Length: 486
Length: 140
Image 1 (spheres, one colour):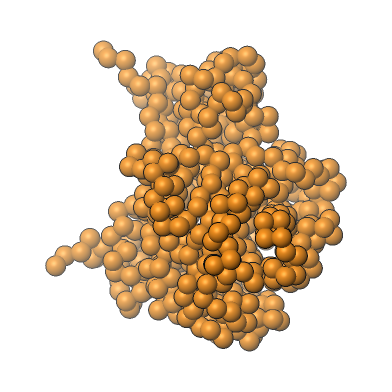
Image 2: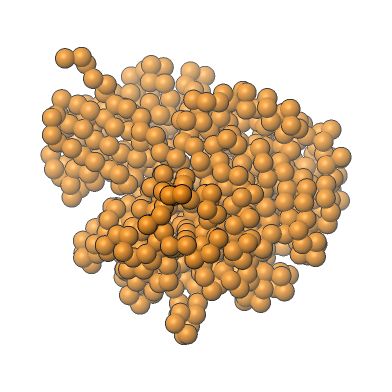
C-alpha cells in the first residue's frame, strides 16, 4: 500500500524518520522526526516536513534538524523543533525560540488527596481564578519600577523569593535556578520594558493555564517518590505560562534586527522568520542577552504565581503551607536557546541549542541537574490538553546522544483555533468536562473551545513515542480535576 | 463587479492569519490592520474616539507591514487601544505614515476574543498585482 510520505522519509526505526538532505536543496544536515507511523500523515499534511527542512539551512547546524512527536506547523521553526548550532561558525535565531520566550511549566506537589480536594474543587478553582490575574491584557498585582524590572531581568526567581513570593527551595528545583546568566537589561528595548512592567505576575491567555491534577498512574514508583509523588490519588498543581508581552516584544525587536544581520552576514534563508545572526557577533550576543532577560522574567512570573497558588490552597483548606506540603517538584522552559556542551564527532563542543516547543531532558549525573535529582535525571514536565493527561518523565543518555538533551513539550495542536471554535462551543466544552469531574473557569469562553481536547493530539501517544524512542522515560501520569484558563 | 471582501481569515494549526485586499496597496494595508483588530474584538462595538499616528521606515514593504502591525499590537498591549479604521497617509517601498482611529478597551462593551503576540514574516506576502493584496500570519 502506498503511503503519502513514501519517497520523502527514510525509516530508521518505528519512532525515527529521516528527511534526507536531498529533500530540499540547501539543507546542511538531514531532518529527523520522532513520531509513530500513524502520526506522519498529519505532520505531512500540514507541511511541517518543509519547516524541519528549512531549519536545516541554518549555518553551523549540527547533527539533525530535529522534530519531537508533538510537532506542528509554526512560523519559521516548527513547534516541537530542536536545532543545535556551533558557537564558532553557527547562528542563533530568535524564531528558534519563539515569541513567548521561556514559556514553560512548573509542577507542585501537595499532601492532599483527591478525596480531600473533590468536595472543594469549585471553591478552589474560583479562588485561584480570583487571586491570579488572567486573560488578554491582564495586569498584575505587582507593580515594579523600571529599576526593579532590571533586577527581575537579571536575578529572576531569586528576586521574587526575596520579595516574599515563595521560598528558596523553589529556586533550587528550577531550570537554570530561575536565573539564566548573561542577561543584560541594556539590550532590551524600552517598548519591551513598557509591556513587561504591568504584566508581571499574570497568567495571560491562549494555551496558558493553571491545573489542579490527580496522580492516576505511576510508571516508576522510586523516581516518583524522589520527586515527592508518593501515591495514586495525590493532588498536584501545574502552572503553564511564560514571559508575557515582555518576551513577545523582545522577539519582535530581534526578528527585525536580525533580519538586517542576515543581509550583513550574507546568510541565505528559505523563510524570513528564520532571521538569525552568528552566535559570535554583536547582534547574536545582544539577542542572547535580551532573551535571557525575558527567560528570567518568565521564571519570576511563575514564581509569583506559585506563591498565590499556595495562598489559595491555604485559604480554601484552612491549613498551613507546611501542612499542605506544597513543595515545587520542578520548573522547565520549553521555548529557549541555551549554550550547552555535547560530544560531536568524538570531541566536546559547545553548541547553541534552540528548543521551540521542546523540553530539556538531561540524564542522571549531568552537572546541571539539581543534586536532589542527580541520581535520577532531570524531571521533564509534559502538559496535555485540559481534558486528558499530563506526564512527568525524566531525561536520559539517549537524549544527550541524539536530541541535544531534548524531548517533547506537550500534546501539539491538531486543529486550528477557528476550526475548534466552529465545531465546539465553549459552554458545551465546559459542561462536557464537568460531567467528567473537571471544573473549568476561563476568562474567555471562546478560548475554552479553542483549547478543547479535540483540538490537540493525544498527549499519551506523544509521550509513548518519546518513551519508546528513549529520549525521556515516563514516571507518572496525572489527570486534571480543576482548570483555570486565561 | 460584486464587491469583494476587505479581508479574510487564514487558518493555520496553531496561529491565524489575514489576507487583505484593496484597490491599491494603501487600502490593503489598512484592511490588514482592521483584520488584525477584528481577531481581537468585534469592530462594530468599537467607537472612534481617539487616534494615533505611526511613522515607520523599513527596508521593504513586507517589513513595513510587519513592523506597523507590531506597532499596533504594542499599542493594544500597553494602552489597550483597539483601532477600527485607518488612514494611510503615505506608503512607498520604505516609508509608511498612517493614522489609526479607535478607543480604549472597555470590558463592559468589548468582548476580547483573543490575544495576539506578534505579526510574523512566515508566509508573508505583499502582492502589488491587481490593486493590492497582502497576507500576514500572527502568533496568537
